[in-house]
Amino acid sequence: MEELGGKFWLWVVGVALAVGIGGMILFSIIGAAWYAWGAVGTIIFLSAIMLLFAWIWDHTHGKTYTGEEPTG
Image 1 (cartoon, rainbow, N blue to C red):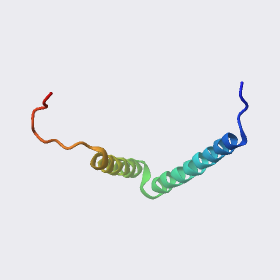
Image 2: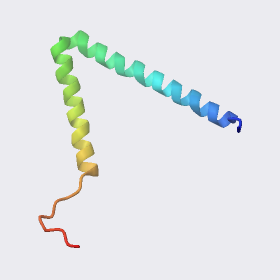
Image 3: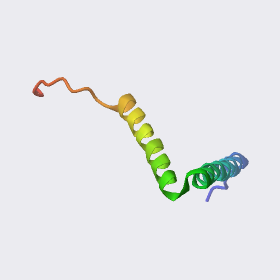
Image 4: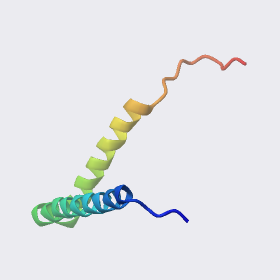
């Protein structure tokens, strides 16, 4: 069995730190929204953020519809 090199372990530590810092930022934003607007406001805020992300994703990755029948 091959040994895992130092580069792999540095990558694992880097990913773990990135996930940890990202989680802290995410929970800080959710906590601030909860403090400012309460539970219902936080749900509306997070829903709006997810809808915005979905809209951007759809416009960057969506296929255009031409209205023609497929040939082949």
